[in-house]
Image (cartoon, rainbow, N blue to C red; front, side):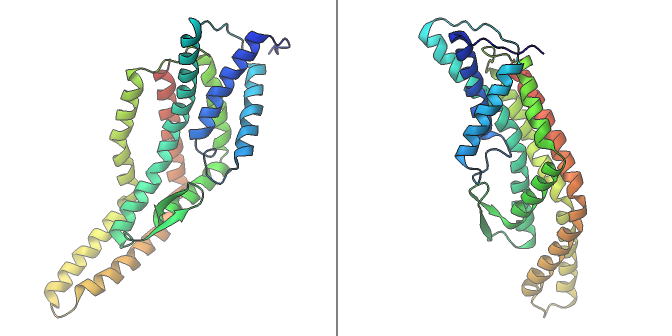
Length: 259
């Protein structure tokens, strides 16, 4: 591929538009928006990645009607990059939501912990699932696919051609409709196990009414929930693969909506 060797004012403008979209993407995308990632590293990655994109992407002439048009184009590029990162990052929040549902079932609903990566208070189970799935995604080199997909998005949505319209809202509504379904699928084993425990406790309450089922139930649900969670660890590669497909699907829908 032919590299651009000349650098005029128009080229500088084109490069700055690329930096705008990439910086907004890094601010919202998974793996890059972690609070533990230093800002200097984010800035360095943005500049290097933008330079590589500038040298490889075909140059397209940018036209805009005056200062107002230039300002609107800057906002559209920043919003396009932010949306592409946000749509995929929101898939990761399913794990936190699933963890809260699991904690409500096993008795950890009142327990929260501070996550230094995401800089938020999260549930114990959600934090555990987040770390495991992130490690599996990094081992599977999903971040490489993520960067390649973002770079390919420039060919579908060239600089200055990003349009934020009602299709973006439709993508959000469609995904939110599946958000709860995905979370319920991930916590279904815990839910079934706790349902069986509640049935057993109900039978025991009828057979031996003198027993304090409240005290016994708390310990039994906690023990049963932890056992099921340990058994569910073998399902985490499948969960990571499932979330990967969801990220890919949402990212492609977001690119189509921004055309």
